[in-house]
Length: 219
Ligand SMILES: CC(C)(COP(=O)(O)OP(=O)(O)OC[C@H]1O[C@@H](n2cnc3c(N)ncnc32)[C@H](O)[C@@H]1OP(=O)(O)O)[C@@H](O)C(=O)NCCC(=O)NCCS
View: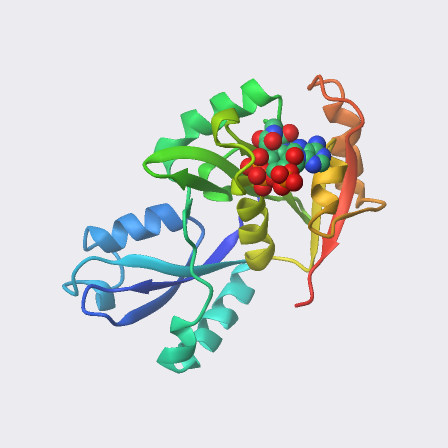
């Protein structure tokens, strides 16, 4: 399965910043925390994820890593931080799968590295996903538990991924056209792989009127 690559900036306990690439942010942060991560982060105290972006290929992640490493510290510190949204870990998978089943969402090729989790206090409130295809990426499975709805959690999940998405075109297949149009998504003819998914999914979910929409990022 195609993987999403991530470039990330982590802050060490001594206040210095470390930039790296990975296909699994949660696992990598665990490695840094346990001293199995990069030599640089060992012995510098707790490591905290400060910023990350998704990239379409390992090559792009490495060139973005090199560009970030060249940035001045102050510029690195100004990269958009993430409040209340964290990369999903293997321990979130059961919650994700349960919620996907309950809300009748896309259950295809679910793996934790593609997901981010929104938290409210200590509770998991929802999630969203970057789903890779061979030639495009979909912003998938945006979900907020009913008791956390209507307070902007869904919107912050969408904005978090729009800022960090691995491609200019951000596809979504959804029956909530009105909700996604608020962010600037517009209905469009989808790439062949997504059209194939749309044809297949109507047999798997009870939802009707699912359409492909696209948001075109500036950079
Ligand atoms: C869609 C969903 C993620 C929104 O989450 P949320 O945290 O409530 O979203 P926000 O608080 O950011 O936005 C809520 C706003 O959208 C509006 N809204 C909700 N559903 C809508 C819809 N179908 N069409 C248009 N607007 C909608 C609400 O009335 C509210 O409006 P307000 O901002 O004027 O008060 C959530 O309802 C959900 O999980 N639904 C089930 C799963 C699903 O269908 N996901 C999308 C499939 S890809």
